[in-house]
Structures are given as C-alpha cells and as structure tokens.
Length: 175
Image 1: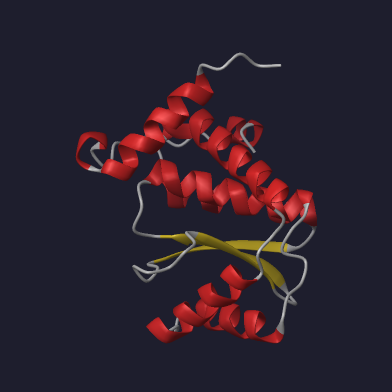
Image 2: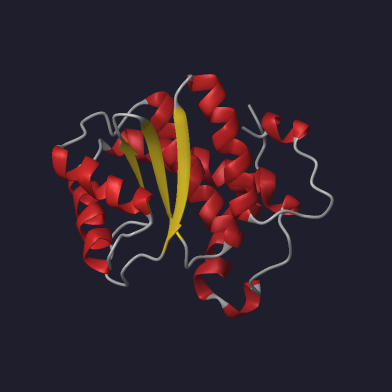
C-alpha cells in the first residue's frame, strides 16, 4: 500500500480521505472487486473504531470519522489487512444489511450502532487482530508525513499515545 503512494502525487499534503480514495482504487484493481471506504462518526460507547463488511458486490471498510487522520490510516490499514490475510470471512445477513444502509448514505444513528454491534460480535482470533493492528500502525507510521497538518498532537491525549507508538515503530530496527 505504501508503494502505491509512489503513483499518487497530490500537489499538497493529502488528507486521510484522499489517501483512502486512492488506496481503494488500487485495492479494487488488485482484487478485481470494488473496495470502498466510508468515514462514519461512531457512537461514543462503541468498542471498535473500524469495520470490514464483505458485501455481495463490494468490500466496505468503515473508519471512525472523529479520530485523528494518522489513527484513521491505522484503522484503514487494520481492516485492509483482513482483506488480504484473513479474518472477517463470515458475513451474516444483518452485517450486509447494515453495510448497505451505510453505503446508501441514509444510515441512521441506529443503523450505525447495529452495524458496529455486528462487527464487534464477529470477534477474531487474537493473533490475527494483533497482526492487523501491527500492519495498521506500520502503515500509518510510513504515511503520516504525507498528511496535511491537522489535529494538534499536544491537545489530544489519544493522539499523544498513538504518536508515541508510531515513533517507536518508525525507529525500530527492521528485520
């Protein structure tokens, strides 16, 4: 995915939504199947910050809209990991219905809650989730300099924790 940025040269630094649109285009070509991403504000009590819905006609990646851009990239990377490396294979009818409502642009807050409840119940094996988390964090670390200036790291506690993690990952020796 990072290599896919070589062909993406915006005139200025990009925002996360621009990167997602570019990546979804590349993913769609690679998978010969439409991949889309929606930024959606999640309910405050949601236990998750992203979800992957494998619909009949496309794969839908849903990312928490109200989080810093570098965290959105980590979430997107986490869900993309599942596209290629497993997890989220089982798509129950209620998951497809919830995803369809999100795609239609007419999703109510209750639709979003139902979609996220379905995604949270589809709990994956911890090893798969850790690998997906690591991929998302590494992707975000590699891409954060391409992002347009946004949230102030100093004013967002979660952002400070994520930035500290990204800094450690970015400076870790590679194998």
